[in-house]
Length: 194
Image 1: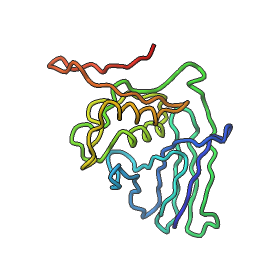
Image 2: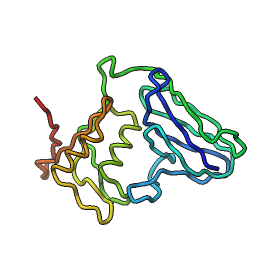
Image 3: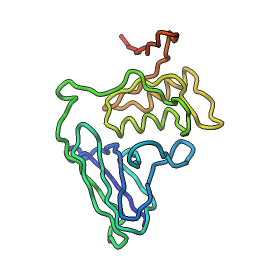
Image 4: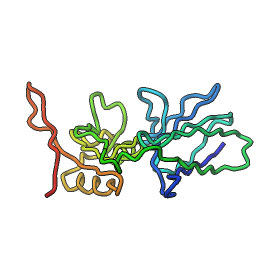
């Protein structure tokens, strides 16, 4: 069955980046795609990240989809079935807290785009999309910036451009490098603008 999910903030009607998790009896894990178009199979429950608008083919079986934007919004579950009259479902998520309004932000000052074994094809645009859907406010990416076969490591200007394109009123993407790196560990530089 082909379905489209449109997810919006209930109060503002703005698109809301979210994590989708599909579940059903006899249904194989449904994962999002990495930057090379392969299943993003990793650890934990299967999930797909989207910018608030997802469309795809699903098994012709009854499914439940959990729709979440961590920290701020109430997670919703909706049922999907092959005999649904509607192929498009609009889901409005209610905000249950507003950390930004209280002065709280969530982020990580040292987030590797590619880490360790580099089994998955990840690049900076995919990493920022996942971060936004997971509900963080800001992220500083560092180390290697792509594990996509045949994709060149972006230079300084390209990393700056990609981070600027990924940044929104609700999310700030920055990049840094880990220096110095030696037997005592390393520091992540946090870029600041005066």
